[in-house]
Length: 432
Ligand code: PGA
Ligand code: ZN
Image (tube, rainbow, N blue to C red; front, top):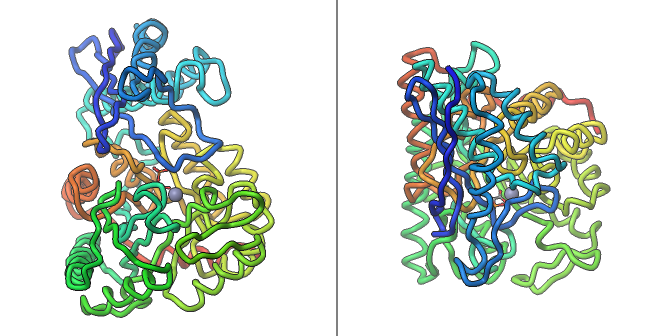
């Protein structure tokens, strides 16, 4: 089936900020849509999100130029092309843009169309997206969720410096178990915060935004919430952190104003090791700045066989950065965000490169999300094994968790869930 038209318009994300929605129309009358998410703690190596910068319109955040670029440049370049050729169509869009970081047309323009092509192709084939996106025919692994309990950093006006305290239900036997355990811990944590008068609101990804006076207090709170809900920290449920350390790094030091402390790179490395030692931390994202390679390397050497070390700002879903990271043994896992790189096929390639190295991909949402659940399909399509979507509240988050339930049903008995045993793979990596 051939593309006959590509249209686009401005919609709004979960923060109420403008974003791009594109529609790809086929000669059969079938239409696919693509909705673009948006980050707040973005990495400096991400593809460019084009915003108009006109202070008179949405405080500079409107995306009318990206939309115009879709209509005037991408639509004519794609007209008449076969919709099933995702990689070729993505390549055409990259060539029309002509820059390394999609800065001329905007990664938000290109991704909206790329997602809409994938959606139109699935609909044209009459198959669920996870099947048509899948590079192989055995796409059936349900992801282990990473779910945010406490949100901070850029997502909660820096009430805490560490961006995310999340949980991984590593002891669960099924996807549904992970959600039940999470729900129980979530409600328990909410009750504890209410009782202690610490609840200040909800962070951008829906997690609690509490008024703790130190990061240690948050660790203790999370461990207590797990226990009070009836689970054993470490065995049943572990802690996952997103330090988002690039945001904490300036003048060669890591700053934690909540604790009233600043650290050299060596001292911050020691702090990360200490936290991993004293608390049941199973996964840690961006523990160091995206330029502080020495610390990444040393940390991976120390704990890379037992702790998942995820590069988000470090890799920005960029294939050459991931390859460099693999060569230099900087981490053992890659956060996968479609809009960091800007096309579906480059994202699939990033996941493939990650998996081929024996590393773990974690498919992730952004802090500014939409009602779309593409990433749930992406996680299953690639057997990625993990999905990170923010909290266990709010529909822009729940739609992704719920979509996995629907995918499990669609797989009618053929789905797999390996849960926390996915981390066994890290033991097989060559020591750094
Ligand atoms: P962002 O945050 O979408 O604001 O970048 C998510 C993350 O850092 O993982
Ligand atoms: Zn992150």
